[in-house]
Length: 198
Ligand SMILES: Cc1cc2nc3c(=O)[nH]c(=O)nc-3n(C[C@H](O)[C@H](O)[C@H](O)COP(=O)(O)O)c2cc1C
Image (tube, rainbow, N blue to C red; front, side, top):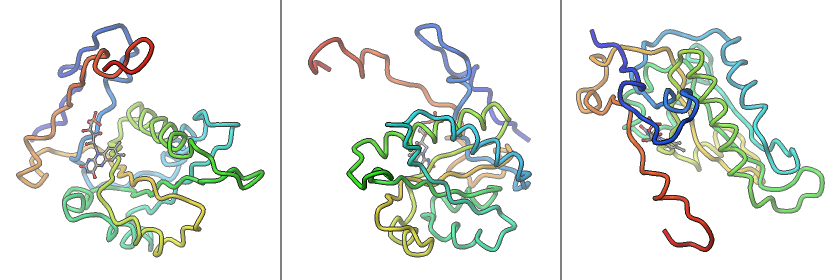
């Protein structure tokens, strides 16, 4: 049986950073075990403290634990390629963002940006707790909107799978060799001084 790899054995930072950024990654191997509700509350608590424009906190998280009546609805939103490994997840979530400011109804240009910050807090807390947390774009957004009663002024952003780490052998064969922490482009590939010159 093969345990999930240690990201610190696969990733090196070019400049000094806190190791939590390297330790966060997106495994797919989960055990199928459930997670206590208090753990989910901790993940959401971390998301709660993300920064946002005017402290708008426009992220919303809908969730379905595996043993809840909502599980199948959430699971059915996923593309088959994600269902193949999410079958062992403990909780599925759908992240929404409010497109307009709650105080005046005017468009909020950074609603997705802020929801992404909340997602990253959620991920880092999950890493700290030894959980698998894996973001997903591969699902049916329109079905999510309809089946989960998402109001018109909210965007459907992403789904998240949360679970306990599992054995790589239990993944479908085509996913086994991809179960390795990935690398990154260097800083110079995405940041420059002054006008765009990348
Ligand atoms: C918004 C978002 C959507 C993603 N969608 C999927 C997905 O549908 N299926 C999947 O297996 N991984 C998905 N991923 C995981 C990415 O492929 C992964 O984050 C990326 O390859 C970097 O690897 P790391 O998270 O392990 O560092 C998604 C990640 C994010 C943040």
